Figure 1 (cartoon, rainbow, N blue to C red):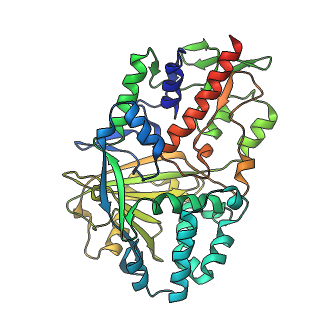
Figure 2 (cartoon, helix red, strand yellow):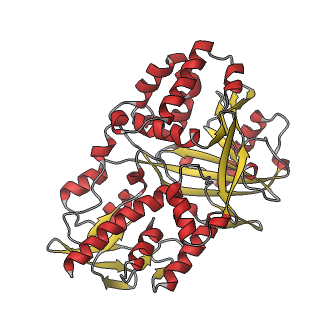
Figure 3 (cartoon, helix red, strand yellow):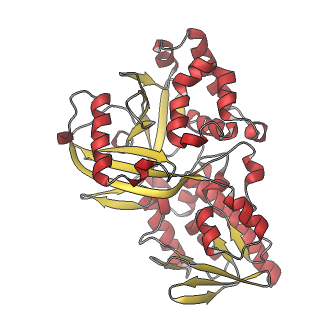
Length: 422
Protein backbone atom coordinates (compact mmCIF):
# COMPACT_ATOMS: atom_id res chain seq x y z
CA UNK A 1 0.00 0.00 0.00
CA UNK A 2 2.78 2.41 0.87
CA UNK A 3 4.64 1.71 -2.37
CA UNK A 4 1.57 2.22 -4.54
CA UNK A 5 0.59 5.39 -2.67
CA UNK A 6 4.10 6.75 -3.31
CA UNK A 7 3.96 5.79 -6.98
CA UNK A 8 0.61 7.55 -7.47
CA UNK A 9 1.93 10.72 -5.83
CA UNK A 10 5.10 10.64 -7.91
CA UNK A 11 3.00 10.40 -11.06
CA UNK A 12 1.26 13.58 -9.95
CA UNK A 13 4.63 15.32 -9.80
CA UNK A 14 5.28 15.27 -6.06
CA UNK A 15 8.60 14.42 -4.41
CA UNK A 16 8.19 11.32 -2.24
CA UNK A 17 10.27 9.39 0.27
CA UNK A 18 9.29 6.01 1.74
CA UNK A 19 10.42 4.84 5.17
CA UNK A 20 10.35 1.05 5.56
CA UNK A 21 11.06 -0.64 8.87
CA UNK A 22 11.89 -3.97 7.23
CA UNK A 23 15.05 -4.76 5.31
CA UNK A 24 12.96 -5.37 2.19
CA UNK A 25 9.89 -3.91 0.53
CA UNK A 26 6.44 -5.47 0.39
CA UNK A 27 5.24 -6.01 3.95
CA UNK A 28 3.28 -9.27 4.15
CA UNK A 29 3.82 -9.82 0.41
CA UNK A 30 7.64 -9.74 0.74
CA UNK A 31 9.69 -12.80 -0.19
CA UNK A 32 12.60 -14.67 1.36
CA UNK A 33 15.21 -17.20 0.27
CA UNK A 34 13.84 -20.56 1.39
CA UNK A 35 16.84 -22.87 1.04
CA UNK A 36 17.39 -21.78 -2.56
CA UNK A 37 13.72 -21.13 -3.38
CA UNK A 38 12.57 -17.51 -3.54
CA UNK A 39 9.07 -17.48 -2.08
CA UNK A 40 6.69 -15.22 -0.20
CA UNK A 41 6.69 -15.21 3.59
CA UNK A 42 2.87 -15.47 3.54
CA UNK A 43 0.84 -17.10 0.79
CA UNK A 44 -1.00 -15.03 -1.83
CA UNK A 45 -3.36 -15.88 -4.64
CA UNK A 46 -5.23 -13.84 -7.24
CA UNK A 47 -8.96 -13.93 -7.88
CA UNK A 48 -10.99 -13.05 -10.97
CA UNK A 49 -12.34 -9.88 -9.38
CA UNK A 50 -8.94 -8.34 -8.56
CA UNK A 51 -9.36 -5.60 -11.16
CA UNK A 52 -7.11 -2.98 -9.46
CA UNK A 53 -4.23 -5.45 -9.64
CA UNK A 54 -4.88 -6.27 -13.30
CA UNK A 55 -4.93 -2.57 -14.18
CA UNK A 56 -1.68 -1.95 -12.29
CA UNK A 57 0.09 -4.87 -13.94
CA UNK A 58 -0.85 -3.42 -17.32
CA UNK A 59 0.19 0.07 -16.25
CA UNK A 60 3.61 -1.23 -15.19
CA UNK A 61 4.03 -3.33 -18.33
CA UNK A 62 4.05 -6.73 -16.64
CA UNK A 63 0.56 -8.03 -17.38
CA UNK A 64 2.21 -11.03 -19.10
CA UNK A 65 3.33 -12.27 -15.65
CA UNK A 66 -0.26 -13.03 -14.61
CA UNK A 67 -1.10 -16.71 -15.01
CA UNK A 68 -4.20 -18.74 -14.22
CA UNK A 69 -4.42 -22.33 -13.08
CA UNK A 70 -7.19 -24.77 -12.27
CA UNK A 71 -7.10 -25.43 -8.51
CA UNK A 72 -8.81 -27.75 -6.10
CA UNK A 73 -10.06 -27.38 -2.57
CA UNK A 74 -10.45 -29.98 0.15
CA UNK A 75 -12.23 -30.35 3.47
CA UNK A 76 -10.67 -32.61 6.10
CA UNK A 77 -13.55 -33.51 8.39
CA UNK A 78 -13.17 -35.89 11.34
CA UNK A 79 -10.49 -38.07 9.80
CA UNK A 80 -11.58 -38.03 6.15
CA UNK A 81 -10.40 -35.78 3.32
CA UNK A 82 -13.33 -34.72 1.15
CA UNK A 83 -13.17 -33.00 -2.20
CA UNK A 84 -14.70 -29.54 -1.91
CA UNK A 85 -15.78 -26.57 -3.96
CA UNK A 86 -18.32 -27.92 -6.43
CA UNK A 87 -21.92 -29.14 -6.19
CA UNK A 88 -21.03 -32.79 -6.62
CA UNK A 89 -18.63 -32.76 -3.67
CA UNK A 90 -21.23 -31.00 -1.54
CA UNK A 91 -23.84 -33.59 -2.52
CA UNK A 92 -21.53 -36.41 -1.38
CA UNK A 93 -20.81 -34.79 1.99
CA UNK A 94 -23.30 -36.50 4.30
CA UNK A 95 -22.16 -35.15 7.67
CA UNK A 96 -25.15 -32.79 7.54
CA UNK A 97 -28.60 -33.27 6.03
CA UNK A 98 -29.34 -32.76 2.34
CA UNK A 99 -31.53 -29.80 3.34
CA UNK A 100 -28.61 -28.20 5.20
CA UNK A 101 -26.33 -28.74 2.21
CA UNK A 102 -28.89 -27.04 -0.03
CA UNK A 103 -29.03 -24.08 2.38
CA UNK A 104 -25.22 -23.91 2.30
CA UNK A 105 -25.21 -23.74 -1.52
CA UNK A 106 -27.95 -21.09 -1.60
CA UNK A 107 -26.01 -19.01 0.93
CA UNK A 108 -22.91 -19.04 -1.28
CA UNK A 109 -25.03 -17.96 -4.25
CA UNK A 110 -26.50 -15.13 -2.18
CA UNK A 111 -23.07 -13.90 -1.05
CA UNK A 112 -21.81 -13.98 -4.61
CA UNK A 113 -24.46 -11.45 -5.57
CA UNK A 114 -24.36 -9.05 -2.61
CA UNK A 115 -24.05 -5.50 -3.93
CA UNK A 116 -24.31 -3.40 -0.78
CA UNK A 117 -22.32 -4.68 2.20
CA UNK A 118 -23.70 -2.01 4.49
CA UNK A 119 -26.80 -4.19 4.74
CA UNK A 120 -24.66 -6.85 6.45
CA UNK A 121 -22.26 -4.53 8.26
CA UNK A 122 -24.11 -4.44 11.58
CA UNK A 123 -25.04 -8.13 11.56
CA UNK A 124 -23.21 -10.62 13.75
CA UNK A 125 -21.61 -13.27 11.50
CA UNK A 126 -22.27 -16.16 13.88
CA UNK A 127 -25.99 -15.42 14.19
CA UNK A 128 -26.25 -14.62 10.49
CA UNK A 129 -24.59 -17.89 9.44
CA UNK A 130 -26.67 -19.91 11.90
CA UNK A 131 -29.83 -18.34 10.49
CA UNK A 132 -28.86 -19.22 6.94
CA UNK A 133 -27.41 -22.70 7.53
CA UNK A 134 -28.88 -23.92 10.81
CA UNK A 135 -26.85 -24.40 13.98
CA UNK A 136 -25.58 -27.89 13.14
CA UNK A 137 -24.35 -26.96 9.67
CA UNK A 138 -22.77 -23.80 11.07
CA UNK A 139 -20.92 -25.93 13.64
CA UNK A 140 -19.60 -28.18 10.86
CA UNK A 141 -18.70 -25.64 8.18
CA UNK A 142 -17.89 -22.37 9.92
CA UNK A 143 -17.51 -22.57 13.69
CA UNK A 144 -14.00 -24.14 13.75
CA UNK A 145 -12.73 -21.78 11.05
CA UNK A 146 -13.84 -18.67 12.93
CA UNK A 147 -12.80 -20.06 16.31
CA UNK A 148 -9.29 -20.95 15.17
CA UNK A 149 -8.80 -17.62 13.49
CA UNK A 150 -10.34 -15.21 15.98
CA UNK A 151 -10.49 -17.16 19.27
CA UNK A 152 -12.23 -14.92 21.83
CA UNK A 153 -13.37 -12.58 19.05
CA UNK A 154 -15.00 -15.36 17.01
CA UNK A 155 -18.58 -14.54 18.01
CA UNK A 156 -18.19 -10.82 17.34
CA UNK A 157 -17.30 -10.65 13.64
CA UNK A 158 -19.20 -8.68 11.00
CA UNK A 159 -21.31 -10.65 8.55
CA UNK A 160 -20.14 -8.28 5.81
CA UNK A 161 -16.55 -9.47 6.23
CA UNK A 162 -17.57 -13.14 5.91
CA UNK A 163 -19.82 -12.47 2.91
CA UNK A 164 -17.05 -10.60 1.08
CA UNK A 165 -14.65 -13.50 1.64
CA UNK A 166 -17.17 -15.95 0.19
CA UNK A 167 -17.88 -13.74 -2.81
CA UNK A 168 -14.22 -13.18 -3.72
CA UNK A 169 -13.45 -16.89 -3.93
CA UNK A 170 -16.82 -17.85 -5.43
CA UNK A 171 -16.24 -15.45 -8.33
CA UNK A 172 -12.96 -17.18 -9.17
CA UNK A 173 -14.52 -20.00 -11.09
CA UNK A 174 -14.51 -21.05 -14.72
CA UNK A 175 -17.79 -22.82 -14.00
CA UNK A 176 -19.68 -24.20 -11.04
CA UNK A 177 -17.45 -27.26 -11.36
CA UNK A 178 -14.01 -25.70 -11.56
CA UNK A 179 -12.14 -23.12 -9.51
CA UNK A 180 -9.43 -21.09 -11.23
CA UNK A 181 -6.96 -18.93 -9.30
CA UNK A 182 -4.14 -16.70 -10.44
CA UNK A 183 -0.50 -16.10 -9.57
CA UNK A 184 2.39 -14.01 -10.83
CA UNK A 185 5.39 -15.64 -12.44
CA UNK A 186 8.21 -14.94 -10.01
CA UNK A 187 5.70 -14.38 -7.21
CA UNK A 188 4.68 -11.06 -5.70
CA UNK A 189 8.33 -9.98 -6.04
CA UNK A 190 7.69 -9.51 -9.77
CA UNK A 191 5.15 -6.80 -9.01
CA UNK A 192 7.05 -5.31 -6.07
CA UNK A 193 10.36 -5.03 -7.91
CA UNK A 194 8.76 -3.43 -10.96
CA UNK A 195 6.87 -0.99 -8.73
CA UNK A 196 10.08 -0.10 -6.86
CA UNK A 197 11.86 0.49 -10.18
CA UNK A 198 9.04 2.78 -11.32
CA UNK A 199 9.33 4.70 -8.04
CA UNK A 200 13.09 5.08 -8.43
CA UNK A 201 12.74 6.11 -12.07
CA UNK A 202 10.49 8.99 -11.02
CA UNK A 203 12.89 10.19 -8.34
CA UNK A 204 11.28 8.51 -5.35
CA UNK A 205 13.51 7.41 -2.47
CA UNK A 206 13.01 4.17 -0.51
CA UNK A 207 14.73 4.00 2.90
CA UNK A 208 15.01 0.36 4.04
CA UNK A 209 15.60 -0.65 7.67
CA UNK A 210 14.48 2.83 8.69
CA UNK A 211 11.55 2.71 11.10
CA UNK A 212 9.70 5.93 11.84
CA UNK A 213 9.88 6.65 15.57
CA UNK A 214 7.71 9.76 15.71
CA UNK A 215 5.39 11.86 13.59
CA UNK A 216 5.77 15.46 14.68
CA UNK A 217 2.78 17.81 14.77
CA UNK A 218 2.77 21.50 15.60
CA UNK A 219 -0.35 23.60 16.19
CA UNK A 220 -2.60 21.13 14.37
CA UNK A 221 -0.30 20.73 11.35
CA UNK A 222 2.01 17.84 10.39
CA UNK A 223 5.66 18.98 10.37
CA UNK A 224 8.21 16.17 10.25
CA UNK A 225 9.06 12.47 10.32
CA UNK A 226 11.41 11.36 13.09
CA UNK A 227 13.83 8.48 12.48
CA UNK A 228 17.15 7.44 14.03
CA UNK A 229 18.74 9.85 11.54
CA UNK A 230 16.82 12.76 13.00
CA UNK A 231 13.81 14.79 11.94
CA UNK A 232 13.00 15.24 8.27
CA UNK A 233 10.51 17.95 7.30
CA UNK A 234 7.77 17.19 4.77
CA UNK A 235 4.62 18.93 3.57
CA UNK A 236 2.44 15.86 4.22
CA UNK A 237 2.66 12.27 5.37
CA UNK A 238 0.68 9.14 4.49
CA UNK A 239 1.01 6.42 7.12
CA UNK A 240 0.33 2.82 6.08
CA UNK A 241 1.58 1.10 9.24
CA UNK A 242 -0.81 -0.95 11.35
CA UNK A 243 -3.12 1.28 13.37
CA UNK A 244 -1.79 0.13 16.77
CA UNK A 245 1.74 1.09 15.67
CA UNK A 246 0.51 4.45 14.44
CA UNK A 247 -0.88 5.09 17.89
CA UNK A 248 2.66 4.71 19.25
CA UNK A 249 4.50 6.86 16.72
CA UNK A 250 1.92 9.66 16.65
CA UNK A 251 1.23 10.31 20.35
CA UNK A 252 0.00 13.82 19.61
CA UNK A 253 -2.90 12.65 17.48
CA UNK A 254 -6.24 14.16 18.51
CA UNK A 255 -7.86 12.20 21.34
CA UNK A 256 -10.91 11.29 19.24
CA UNK A 257 -8.71 9.66 16.58
CA UNK A 258 -6.59 7.82 19.12
CA UNK A 259 -9.76 6.47 20.74
CA UNK A 260 -10.99 5.02 17.44
CA UNK A 261 -7.62 3.49 16.66
CA UNK A 262 -7.31 2.07 20.17
CA UNK A 263 -10.69 0.36 19.86
CA UNK A 264 -9.54 -1.73 16.88
CA UNK A 265 -8.06 -5.15 17.69
CA UNK A 266 -5.67 -7.20 15.58
CA UNK A 267 -4.90 -10.90 15.36
CA UNK A 268 -1.32 -12.09 14.89
CA UNK A 269 -0.19 -14.85 12.56
CA UNK A 270 2.57 -17.40 12.75
CA UNK A 271 3.00 -18.99 9.34
CA UNK A 272 5.02 -22.19 9.20
CA UNK A 273 6.36 -22.76 5.68
CA UNK A 274 7.62 -26.27 4.95
CA UNK A 275 9.40 -27.71 1.94
CA UNK A 276 8.25 -31.30 1.48
CA UNK A 277 9.93 -34.28 -0.18
CA UNK A 278 6.72 -34.99 -2.12
CA UNK A 279 3.27 -33.55 -2.76
CA UNK A 280 0.99 -33.72 0.27
CA UNK A 281 -2.43 -33.48 -1.44
CA UNK A 282 -3.73 -32.41 -4.82
CA UNK A 283 -5.44 -29.39 -3.26
CA UNK A 284 -4.38 -25.77 -3.11
CA UNK A 285 -6.43 -25.10 0.02
CA UNK A 286 -7.70 -27.62 2.56
CA UNK A 287 -10.02 -26.53 5.37
CA UNK A 288 -9.81 -28.61 8.53
CA UNK A 289 -12.36 -29.61 11.14
CA UNK A 290 -10.84 -32.17 13.48
CA UNK A 291 -10.82 -32.20 17.30
CA UNK A 292 -7.06 -32.86 17.46
CA UNK A 293 -5.95 -30.35 14.80
CA UNK A 294 -5.92 -26.76 16.05
CA UNK A 295 -5.41 -24.99 12.72
CA UNK A 296 -8.17 -23.91 10.32
CA UNK A 297 -6.45 -25.22 7.21
CA UNK A 298 -3.33 -25.72 5.12
CA UNK A 299 -2.26 -24.16 1.81
CA UNK A 300 -0.26 -26.27 -0.62
CA UNK A 301 1.20 -23.43 -2.64
CA UNK A 302 2.93 -25.60 -5.23
CA UNK A 303 -0.49 -26.81 -6.36
CA UNK A 304 -1.17 -23.25 -7.55
CA UNK A 305 2.29 -22.10 -8.65
CA UNK A 306 4.29 -24.58 -10.76
CA UNK A 307 7.67 -25.07 -9.10
CA UNK A 308 10.23 -27.83 -8.64
CA UNK A 309 9.71 -27.91 -4.87
CA UNK A 310 6.63 -28.93 -2.85
CA UNK A 311 5.75 -25.97 -0.62
CA UNK A 312 3.12 -26.05 2.12
CA UNK A 313 1.97 -23.15 4.32
CA UNK A 314 0.51 -23.85 7.76
CA UNK A 315 -1.00 -20.63 9.16
CA UNK A 316 -1.65 -20.15 12.86
CA UNK A 317 -3.84 -17.12 13.52
CA UNK A 318 -4.10 -16.18 17.18
CA UNK A 319 -4.20 -13.24 19.57
CA UNK A 320 -0.67 -12.30 20.69
CA UNK A 321 -1.78 -13.14 24.25
CA UNK A 322 -2.23 -16.80 23.28
CA UNK A 323 0.39 -19.11 24.85
CA UNK A 324 1.30 -20.56 21.45
CA UNK A 325 2.41 -17.16 20.19
CA UNK A 326 5.49 -17.63 22.40
CA UNK A 327 6.31 -21.06 20.96
CA UNK A 328 9.77 -21.57 19.55
CA UNK A 329 10.22 -22.50 15.90
CA UNK A 330 10.95 -26.06 16.98
CA UNK A 331 7.72 -26.29 18.98
CA UNK A 332 5.73 -25.14 15.95
CA UNK A 333 7.51 -27.66 13.75
CA UNK A 334 6.75 -30.51 16.16
CA UNK A 335 3.07 -29.57 16.19
CA UNK A 336 2.92 -29.22 12.40
CA UNK A 337 4.39 -32.70 11.97
CA UNK A 338 1.78 -34.04 14.39
CA UNK A 339 -1.07 -32.38 12.49
CA UNK A 340 0.20 -33.45 9.08
CA UNK A 341 0.44 -37.05 10.31
CA UNK A 342 -3.25 -36.87 11.26
CA UNK A 343 -4.19 -35.51 7.85
CA UNK A 344 -1.99 -38.08 6.12
CA UNK A 345 -1.28 -41.18 8.25
CA UNK A 346 2.29 -42.32 7.84
CA UNK A 347 3.68 -38.83 7.38
CA UNK A 348 6.78 -38.21 9.50
CA UNK A 349 9.35 -35.50 10.00
CA UNK A 350 11.45 -37.18 7.31
CA UNK A 351 8.97 -35.81 4.80
CA UNK A 352 10.14 -32.25 5.53
CA UNK A 353 13.26 -30.96 3.78
CA UNK A 354 13.24 -27.43 5.22
CA UNK A 355 11.14 -25.20 7.45
CA UNK A 356 10.78 -21.47 8.06
CA UNK A 357 8.56 -19.84 10.67
CA UNK A 358 7.39 -16.30 9.85
CA UNK A 359 5.58 -14.08 12.34
CA UNK A 360 3.46 -10.96 11.94
CA UNK A 361 2.05 -9.23 15.01
CA UNK A 362 -0.62 -7.21 13.19
CA UNK A 363 -1.80 -9.63 10.52
CA UNK A 364 -5.59 -9.48 10.61
CA UNK A 365 -7.95 -6.77 11.77
CA UNK A 366 -10.88 -7.93 13.89
CA UNK A 367 -13.81 -6.54 11.88
CA UNK A 368 -16.64 -6.30 14.37
CA UNK A 369 -20.31 -5.57 13.56
CA UNK A 370 -20.67 -1.90 12.67
CA UNK A 371 -17.07 -1.72 11.48
CA UNK A 372 -17.77 0.97 8.87
CA UNK A 373 -18.48 3.39 11.70
CA UNK A 374 -15.65 2.04 13.86
CA UNK A 375 -12.99 2.87 11.27
CA UNK A 376 -11.20 6.19 11.72
CA UNK A 377 -11.12 8.51 8.74
CA UNK A 378 -8.13 8.49 6.37
CA UNK A 379 -8.05 12.24 6.89
CA UNK A 380 -7.09 13.77 10.21
CA UNK A 381 -7.92 17.01 11.92
CA UNK A 382 -4.14 17.44 11.81
CA UNK A 383 -3.49 19.12 8.46
CA UNK A 384 -1.23 17.09 6.17
CA UNK A 385 -1.59 13.83 8.13
CA UNK A 386 -3.26 10.85 6.39
CA UNK A 387 -3.50 7.22 7.39
CA UNK A 388 -4.70 3.78 6.30
CA UNK A 389 -3.87 0.16 6.97
CA UNK A 390 -5.42 -3.17 5.99
CA UNK A 391 -8.45 -2.43 8.17
CA UNK A 392 -9.49 0.05 5.48
CA UNK A 393 -10.00 -2.81 3.00
CA UNK A 394 -13.17 -3.70 4.88
CA UNK A 395 -15.31 -5.58 4.08
CA UNK A 396 -12.73 -7.15 1.79
CA UNK A 397 -9.86 -9.19 3.17
CA UNK A 398 -6.15 -8.52 2.70
CA UNK A 399 -4.89 -8.80 -0.87
CA UNK A 400 -2.48 -6.94 -3.12
CA UNK A 401 -5.46 -5.77 -5.16
CA UNK A 402 -7.11 -4.18 -2.12
CA UNK A 403 -3.76 -2.61 -1.18
CA UNK A 404 -3.63 -0.95 -4.60
CA UNK A 405 -7.20 0.29 -4.42
CA UNK A 406 -6.83 1.72 -0.91
CA UNK A 407 -3.47 3.30 -1.78
CA UNK A 408 -5.01 5.05 -4.77
CA UNK A 409 -7.71 6.60 -2.58
CA UNK A 410 -5.13 7.60 0.03
CA UNK A 411 -2.82 9.17 -2.56
CA UNK A 412 -5.66 11.24 -4.00
CA UNK A 413 -6.47 12.68 -0.60
CA UNK A 414 -2.82 13.65 -0.06
CA UNK A 415 -2.56 15.11 -3.57
CA UNK A 416 -5.73 17.18 -3.12
CA UNK A 417 -4.39 18.56 0.16
CA UNK A 418 -1.06 19.53 -1.39
CA UNK A 419 -2.83 21.22 -4.30
CA UNK A 420 -4.91 23.25 -1.87
CA UNK A 421 -1.68 24.46 -0.23
CA UNK A 422 -0.24 25.77 -3.51
